[in-house]
Length: 397
Image 1: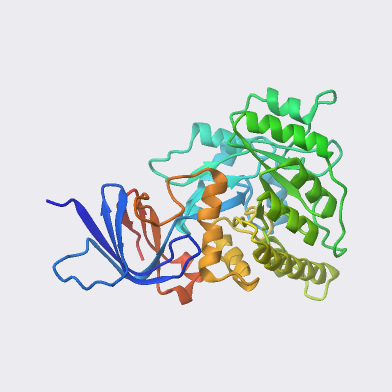
Image 2: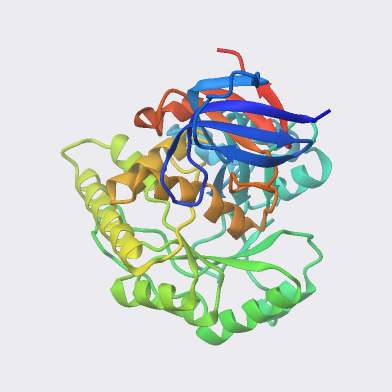
């Protein structure tokens, strides 16, 4: 007797960037997908184990840039206090943020660092993958240069020690390395750039050491020179990349380096500012410029992985993926292409093999959102079901 069970889905976005399929019957045996029937639900002799015909199914979402210790609140006092919280308080906040990701179908996040490495400690001591299927990849503490931006998310190398030596000698068991190579974007002066924090040699040496340790390097970089230095060094992803320019986009495409644009940060900033202020005008221009760069990235064939910078002002864990997906679509990505950025590309960047594509012989791991694709990405806030390794869980509502 066959152990294959069937799930009927109204629409399927498989994560490959290919066309959206309609009226699909998935065959699942044990943990894997064994068939994808695109001809609809025509065989009356087969009774589906689950009816998701009013839903769109897609791979689990991946947020490739978050700060689990920080919330998206715009309360300045709360924001200041959360930078120096103890671990007991941090683990409550992190747990809540993970729950918010799960409720929006985000089953993997890449943390970009915090001052005390609370996210790393949480992963090692508290995260229960059985009760929470969200995969957490952490940087621990980011690295930055003395006197430069980065103290709120990390540390600086010792006075007589190189960045590469510090990475080599660090005992923290992290999933990747985070390096800060520029300042923040100005909210008062459009297009203002800062100098690189590290030289090309410092970055190149750091990347080589990280790769020997089996770790990828994510680099915070805005502006032409900081991004150029990071790209030439062979880093694995550029975080933010505001005002990097077309030459860097071409170099990024040539070197096949992933970009995590975090455009929704500027949208969130603008929504919390006085509309007639300089800051409002600059943030809107920053956003428009970033959307143009994202559009160019699509033309150049650059791999974009969706990341939100959740924990920034107005950027809320979980729900921010809706905003970032919407901005990718606004920049010219098709729905299927945007989903690929938020699923397959993110999973690949994080080194996750358990999900990212819905295809034959792949694990039966996906999410189902209510409604047809025209309701996406807003429908992410209405997750109907989550399937992990062939086990389907219907969610209330």
